[in-house]
Length: 130
Length: 70
Image: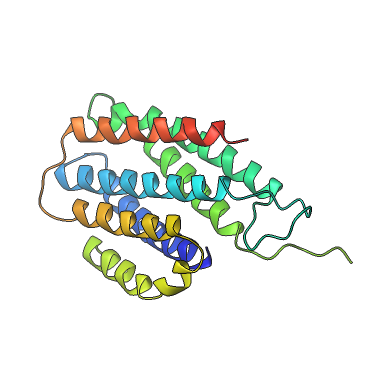
């Protein structure tokens, strides 16, 4: 799981950085549209990683498991994913050139970044109370 | 950092895949899928509004599946 998260977070961070640089100018040319598609593909892969994490057994301590899902982490991840999917849907008309960008692209990229960060947080060791 | 360099990094990171193999077939499948999907998107193939719509519809559908997980 750690390798998976490393790969996805590193890749999505780089793709997001590239996409930000390309989408920042007002015009959405062919190259920018390609960057947008790559970003959406990356997000679709990130969603699959979220699903994998969501299907892990809960870390409730009732039975020993090698990999488990922290309820708080899962809640944050699921909320971030819901927000990102809404933001992406809201940006769709901008990506298709049907509407002027009034911040939809940046909001979508920020929301995708939040999902990547929430996924990365799941690999951090649980804090132990003193 | 251009898109080719991004894919190069992804391939380098995938060299560590034996660690993921131990965690299950699903993760390996996901890594392979990630590489395939991202590789397909790098190139000169033009992206149409229909491609964007199809991706967004897929994202919506997967989001619904995620929100259904308890």
